[in-house]
Image 1 (cartoon, rainbow, N blue to C red):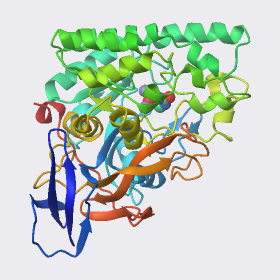
Image 2: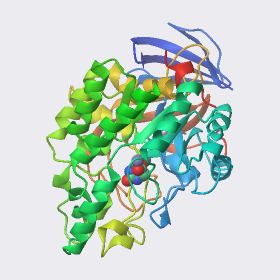
Image 3: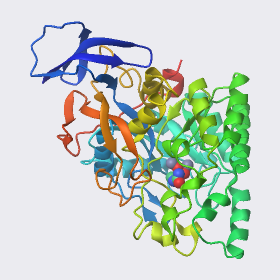
Image 4: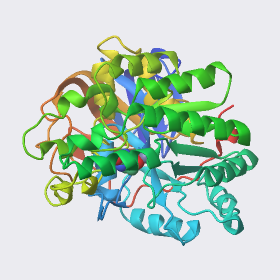
Length: 462
Ligand code: URP
Ligand code: ZN
Ligand code: ZN
């Protein structure tokens, strides 16, 4: 199969020019002006952008959490991702306490098998790291699982103590892998939460009010100190507040290899969105929680100045009915997480590029190129270049779209951005040269997505 995309405006992290792109089988073969090559399919992309497919390095598909399981599996989740222009994800396999990482990896491969519609990589969530099993981390790196998430929150469930985090970091310093940190002081939050419950404060808003930004900033600071002592890099996931951002900025000013991502929910939603009647606010219960609105401008500035390098989604969807409702009488029982895999590119384009907050190149860099570099996928993915995978999105900058549960493809019964109107959306999506979406129709097949063995951070991010 061959495809010629003609007259598109090619946007990468560094470049912006008009050219034709010729794809054969799974790869980009030639880029040039006025290419005269016969192809099975010729698409005129005049007036449209040709961008590398989005890479979402923070998703939780089919993940057991909070007494239930996230409601998108690898089929529905990756299909929804593709509808939003994302052609590769890195999902989180979770090690069960008392079990080995290898078991978690096998379990997550099975979850994805026959289902993934786009390529996917895996991080490993470490919940248990006895000295005798430290080499399991090397085993994972050999399998292409080159990043590890540890939690400083959720005591007795997922939380790792400082010694465990330090040992994991020291190990990544040897292998070149990367620790991804959920940075919130779980012990302190637990005390505040128990007090709130004792005072009868059980509504969803108390999820947000019991998790202060200082608890996030303290943990970010501590994880940076642990990484510095270990001689390792650290990547802070889902950074939500200016207090935490300042800690990252300080560390980067010192020249430390400290990186951070934020997510659309922290750029577009705030505590002001937690004022709905009844139990509705449970729809935006995730961790870290929504913050005061003034943080938005600070996070946008962080994206512009490269204090933040990546925008991911932390897609972790739970249906309002029956799943979020588990916490109807106690906010601590609301499964934490929100749906977002489908709308990252549209929100960032409309709210970022069109509002003049970030450039077109920066949009591509934040949503595709840097995630690819940081997580060992580049240059196979994350750019439009000869020899790269033909993971390509033809983007229509003028297409109007209203985000809604009525039209989205995620298997969740609500949208966090219900009714939000955006300009700019996908036109056509290619995954490894295969046209998987055109005219709002999906042509991909469940199971066509491959597991991607990733390079290490040290090997890829030079
Ligand atoms: O609330 C969230 N973010 N749920 C997913 C798990 C995590 O901490 O990323
Ligand atoms: Zn987390
Ligand atoms: Zn997450």
